[in-house]
Amino acid sequence: MSVTRIAGGVTAAKGFKAAGCEAGIKKAGRADMAMIASDVPCVLAGTFTTNVVKAAPVLWDKEIVQRGTGRAVVVNAGIANACTGKEGMEYCERTAREAASYIGAKTEEVLVASTGVIGQQLPIDRILSGVKKLSGTLSDTMGGGRDAAKAIMTTDTVPKECAVSVTLTDGTEITIGGCAKGSGMIHPNMCTMLCFLTTDAAISQEMLQKALSSVVPDTFNMISVDGDTSTNDTCILMANALAGNNPIEEEGEDYRLFTEGLYQTAETIAKVMAKDGEGATCLFECSVIHAATKEDAKTLARSVVSSILTKAAIAGHDANFGRLLCALGYSGVVFDPERVSLVLESAAGRLLVYDNGVPLPFDEEYATKILSQDEIRCIADMKCGSASATAWGCDLTHEYVSINADYRS
Image (cartoon, rainbow, N blue to C red; front, top):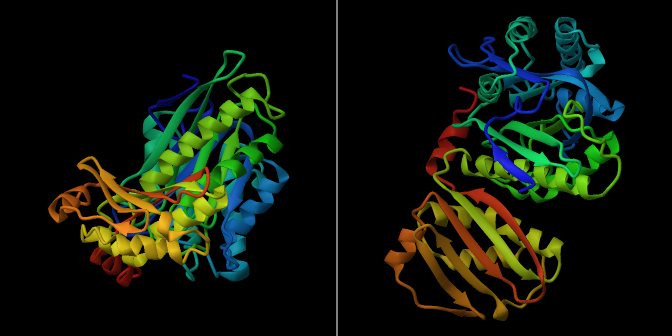
């Protein structure tokens, strides 16, 4: 196989180090800062929130990505540095300048990212102290990557990591790795979370951005937890060329292989994010098949996984397929409901509940068993074309309200 899943995360690729630490931004005893750094300058690509209200780190990082090269990213959890005015931007620069001084980089080569409560100023003295701690503990081990993945968590219950090895046409093996945080404020409209991807591939900035921009719409933009698009959504991809492959400078087989590896990394992380939605007990996947166009398929699938009533039914293990049809129907896509078929499946079995516009009798106990697993899938066959798409979400439980009602306290 050209693409193989391997152990690790952001430190799996050659030349990348990472660390996490407790800087005192969140409650005592919780890591809340991370750093990811390359031994050499990297080509950069990025995608960012489409929310009109953009956090200071998003504005800072967009400028750096446009310039095209970077060395490191510093991340804090607990405070978003969003809606913080001129002071928030100054704190981005101070953080970057501090990190640059420790790793021998330029201020404009250090990206920053934040996640947490909106409207609060960062405790900059603690941030700068955290940068010093992180700089002294950077490690290229799997443990270093895991520490970083844990440190950026907020309401997440598990760290989110993935790495793959890709064999290119010249026989060179390149590695792509990544970590992310995201549990609430997740909705498909750019990658609704923080995600940091690393690779040792030699690739031009144009091709790197093209690859990332092609992967995001079918992975991170196809997940939804609660319908909220954050002010801080950021996905950064860093490539340091240390694998020594023939540089990927145009579309071709090597570009295809690189993009396939990037897709597998992003999809794996995206599904873990959806499954770890705030208060969630399961991953809920909707695959739309035989739609008229790819865009129709994506719109339909996203509508189903974003439906509050559908998510509540999944939480109750209730095979109320009327909610699935309703979500398909208000998506804005035109189709013939008399041709639609719906299947519910999981590790416990498979059940056709609606076929060609007619509800089918089924065993409610069997349906409940299917919907009681930790990964559930709905297949919506539109029977009007050849396009397909998959979206990922989760159930909606009382715990989601509890988490967000007490978020600041």
